[in-house]
Every structure is written in structure tokens, then in C-alpha cells.
Amino acid sequence: MADDEQVEDIRKKRLESRKMEEQLRMSLRMALDEQAYARLVNVAVANKELYLTAAKNALMAYKRMGRKIKDAELLTLLRAIKEQTETKTTITFHKK
Image 1 (cartoon, rainbow, N blue to C red):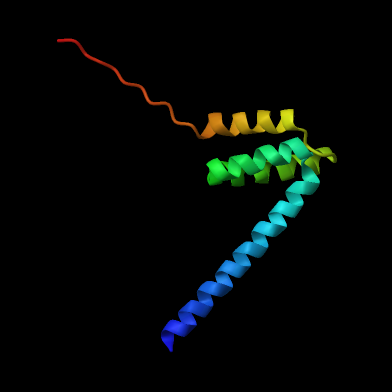
Image 2 (cartoon, helix red, strand yellow):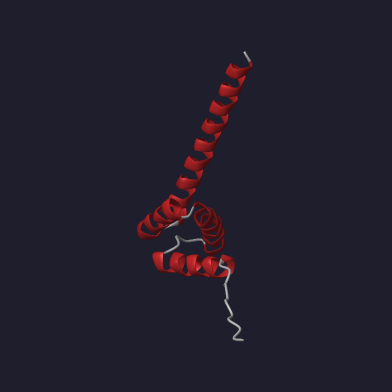
């Protein structure tokens, strides 16, 4: 009995997650031109965290500008996000 309830909860969560993803995709289609949307979908495959951050920022920029975001603008946005989140590693060697 408890297993059935757990399975049903998992199904509900997956369905809810799919609905949210579909809603995000529809919003992004409205906010981005075709090339920018294609680029962001490719980013989603490669790096889900970067995709979610870029999607949020792109939707905010769309709302602020009142027009579709072009591919060059999205690329600038992606580079800015990447620079902010990327940590730089430095290695120093000490000679004896």
C-alpha cells in the first residue's frame, strides 16, 4: 500500500515538473527569436544550471525591453553568466 502511494507521488511530481518545463519553453519561445531559442535549447542539453539561469535572465530582459531577445544579445548574456559563475583556479609552484 505504501509503495503505491509513493509511486503515485512520484508520478504527480514528474507531471508537475513536465508542466513547468513546458510553460518555461512556451515563455522562452515568446521572448526569444528562433536562433536564440535554438541556442538556449543547446545550452539546456549541455548545462542545465546555466540554462535555467539564462532562461530567467532572458525572460527578465524581455519584460524590460518589451521585444524579443536576439541571438547576439543572448550570447552576451550567456557569456556574462559564465564569467560570474566560473571560478578561476590558480596553481603556484614554489622552487626550493
